[in-house]
Length: 157
Image (cartoon, rainbow, N blue to C red):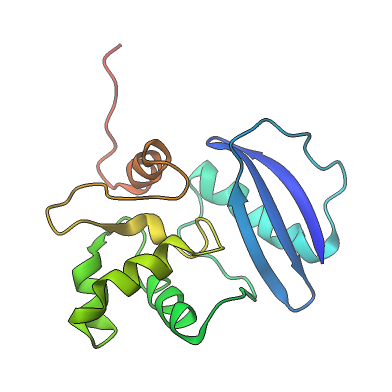
């Protein structure tokens, strides 16, 4: 398994993967030394993430290989279908997966998503449009949603 650390506008991110695909991308809550030479297996992921943060990429085209249960992988696959700049609720996600009663299990699988940004769990919000739970912190979730918003807010100060 290859790893690298890159700097993003939201902090340092650790990327892990190999020839079978990207298995994990996590945002770190501490300052880390960035990787000088990106492993070949991770180069495209780093490139695509940089394009995303620059605002020129709205869809990822990467081979993914996350570890998880069958159910978790079903949820993560469904998360990939949420369009850039759009959000859905946990309830809506549960309905898409065919079981409205599975909302807590869906939320739990969402929280265990190992592929930060690439599998866009940040696009799932509460039924009342609230920013509920996000492993990377609600400030990062808000930043990501604003970054993807077609109606960019500008600050006055």
